[in-house]
Length: 405
Length: 231
Image (tube, rainbow over all chains, first blue to last red):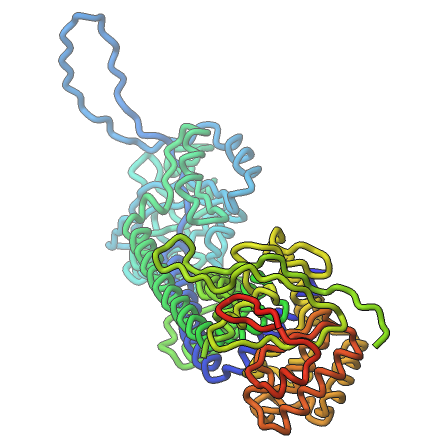
């Protein structure tokens, strides 16, 4: 019964849209411009943010687990005792995370983490002839670490081969030490051990600081050099949802007692910039959406006035208030849908132009769910905007409406 | 006509006032009582401002009386919900207005089918055939696909007559149906009402100023200052 009645409502709504062709075209263009702006701006900002995040976090862990800082323990005193303390902060020596193997097993179970990579890292001096450079020794578990940072993609000379005496160094360091693949350098950690290693590969991450300082070697080679046999100093973690990193970090902190640093905490500026960007896009979306809604509402209001007599006739020939209401709500929904279809097509074209002929700084993807939500939102906006004019149409007194000229 | 007459409409003490209880209260209809049978072909006459249109709207369930009761096919209508009255109106009452009000967005055939579509959705094959039959009856069979603005005034009025009849109503109400037409078209429309009344056994009530028209009706109901005048 409902479906059968709605058939007529659709018929009348479509006939009204066809009949008022000029208005329909105008409002469709209006809605289309709005939807195109919203979709394009959203895609642009999403593309930009994805790009910024990829560039910044592509070579970083999302969360780093570290042994908590060492603090002095001051013995408690009895009540009523005046207690003066002069405390020297403790020097933070390199220490291993306790029970890291068990921790690793536990972390591997969690679905919200994609990569868990233990590493041992500490300072050293790299020496070749008279050149001495300070470097960061990074001892890695290659099968795990490559999921975090696929060094293979960044190798500019030689190959990724660590273990035995083979190490990887950054291009900047290679340049400063004047070495090529196959050359030997001396690594001195200032502890008892120093060691001569062979350069198996040279990488270039594109971040000058890293390219000048990082020396990758196998974890097992690095441990004795740093006097941490069997230990690791950091567990690097990547998560599925990077914006959840801070919450996950806090959870891991409570769970393990370790210091957990998320990229959000350590890159506050970046996070601020991303949030500000999202806020401003949302503002644009809201304002454009509101103007689209007002456009639809005003066109339909005019239409209700123009069709007053016809509404009266429909009521006299058996249309209920609910039917009149639906006829105008449907028109609103159709305005939204039509406009959104055109708008989405336009934004596709804009994005294509940007991707093909733009500055080429980054690629803008259009997510299918963005299209679907734009269409759905436009229809809902159309219905919402039609609510007031539709109510007015439904509440017209048929007697007066028929006499209306 | 030997067919059994059945009561279609009965008005009992109908009053209609506007702005009730306010200083500018206007009483338009006073204590109107009469009934219409299925054999009735009546004219409602009276000078301008005597309340003819108001009475027509009340009878057509477009307007509610202030007091009194209106029975349509034996059912009291004053206690009905708006939705029920709308349904009853769509099914049992056919309207023809003075200015052949058609919906511009639809062609003649769809305009004729409109009451059926509003009442039960997509028209059946039978409905469409009946609409064609009615258009044939009013002599517009060939113009079924024309839009209202492609038809003359008389043609539009005949479409409106066909529309009023499509739901086979028990009551046909017409407000100055020929007021806007030349005499030839007026005669055609009037003949059509006659024919339809015989064919469909519906009560017909025409509001008119035209004495020739009213004298051609079987019965005349006269309103004067909102009161019924016995002939």
